Picture 1 (spheres, rainbow, N blue to C red):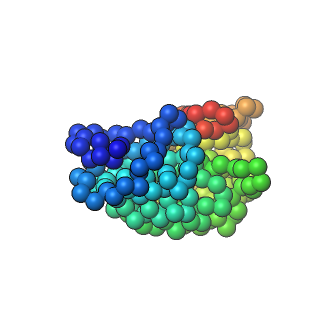
Picture 2: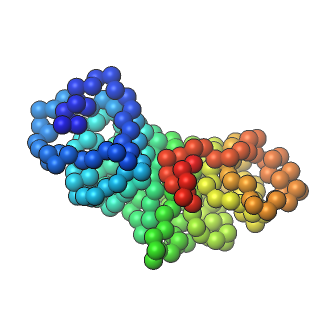
Picture 3: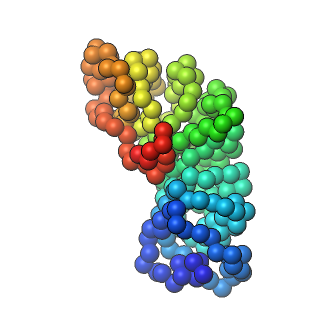
Length: 245
């Protein structure tokens, strides 16, 4: 029923699905004959997905009918869902924000190579009870796979400073804005300074959470000399440390 309603909403630009939304049992009905869906922004967060197979079918049907999808925010991702997004959105997507477990980073990196028009990317690493942070191999592959037109990168990762440094120094595009959804101590601030000096003098804005321990004053003066705008990261529809930021 939802797809039928959406196909008739010719002026609807943004669709937001959150905790009270449920996939109908009849979602698997044939979608042939439905008009294209004109939404450009799809935001899905805090959704209680009881049937992953049904949700994936819903997403396949929705994205197949949507030809103008520019912005996608999603908390649940899987190999199959990444393939669907790649198939139907690779030519139109400009903003992609997702929450992902470390084991899926390699698959994401492979998919990113197809998003030629992607300008903004936010990746929030989510650790399950038995998960380890993304490996160095995965981080480097991600860095090497960032689309060439990307201007804004937001990232949350649980890796240590050594691996984070290697991640940044393997980015081969000049992003303009960088948001880091972590508390940064002096060691990480030093890494960002090194990244700007060695790889990207074009960085115009940095967002991060202030460290609980006050950062070294000399470092803060130095980084403010290199980056014109420093502030807290942008709001996102993903949970970090039990809160949505």
